Structures are given as C-alpha cells and as structure tokens.
Figure 1: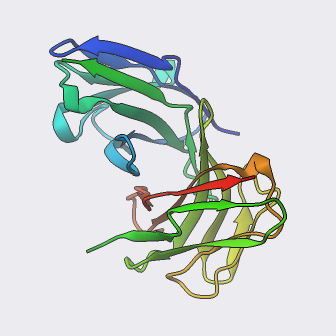
Figure 2: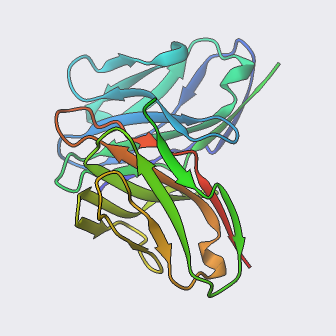
Length: 114
Length: 114
C-alpha cells in the first residue's frame, strides 16, 4: 500500500524566509504527486501537481516542488514566504491504480510571523 | 460556479443518533470520496465511489455507510455515531477520465458526537 510521510509537523518562519517542506512516499510504481494547502477554516485547495515530464513543477502563489524519483521525494519550496502563507500543507500521492485514491500525509502546519 | 457542497457544516449530536452528511457536486464528476481529518493524522479516506451504484471502502470505513444513487450526490451516513467519530469531514470529487487527478473538496463538516 502507498504511504506518505511529512516529517515537519510544525514550521515557524519569519516573513521573507525560504521554505522547504519535506514529503516522502512509499510506492514502487508510477505515481501522481500533489501538494494541497488548507488555509485556516477553509477546505483544501490544490497548490501543484506532478504527473510526468519536468520533475520541477511550479504551482500557484510562487510555490514549486521537485520530484526526485530516486529518493521517493516531492519537497515543496518557496523562496520567500509571506504572512498569508500561514496554513497547513498536505502532500498526497495517487498510485494511479484502479482505486484512484489519494493518500495524504499527516500535514505540516506553517506559521509565518510578520 | 464549480463546487462541492456539504451540509451541515457544523453539527453536534449525541451517541447513537443517526445522522447524514450530504454532499453534492455540480461538475459531473464520476468519482466521489469522503475523508476525515484528525490532528496529526492528515486526511484518511472513509469511502469512495467510482460511479453511480459503485462504492467501496477506504482506509477507515468502520461506523460509516454511503450510497451513490445519483451521480451528483454522495451522502455519508452514521447509523449510530460514537464519540470517536468526532472529526472534520470532507467530501471530494474528481473526473476519472483523462489525467487530471485533482480532487475538488467541499468546505468541510465539523461533527461533534457527545
């Protein structure tokens, strides 16, 4: 079965600091990878996704993620965070099986201090 | 506007009192799913449906039922709620054709079982 690990549970940064959130998954086959964001009190929204091609994908609001197949990783990055990036971030994997289920990591809570 | 609508958004109930959380999507998506979100555990899939009259268990189906009589609706039924079902519930939908993979989420339903 597929699984997703997010090792940073709570990250606190100052505005303009750089961000990198780790995501590792376990599945030996072809995967689709996602990062979702959940702003306080809101539902999940898609930040970016990777299906194939260029392993460096760019999403909304200046976020990007790099798929490193050899490391089973899909880390999220942003060069300079803003206070409005305060949210919870979820990495998710779809092993592209018939079940078509997304498996989510436990989430990383990002707090950006002004 | 494309959306997934859940009701109720907030509910406090007592142990054993049957309840239903409704979910409706207006995007003609074949795939629908229910997740529960708990602190430190991320989102866990309860049930999913690949199409009308086709449902299957996710990772944490115990204590829940679903039905998919129409394409747009996917209600979650708690026949006899218990306190361990206190959680934040999200309904989501996705088109199964093509290579999109993106799940669209509802606003969430916060359930408290006393």
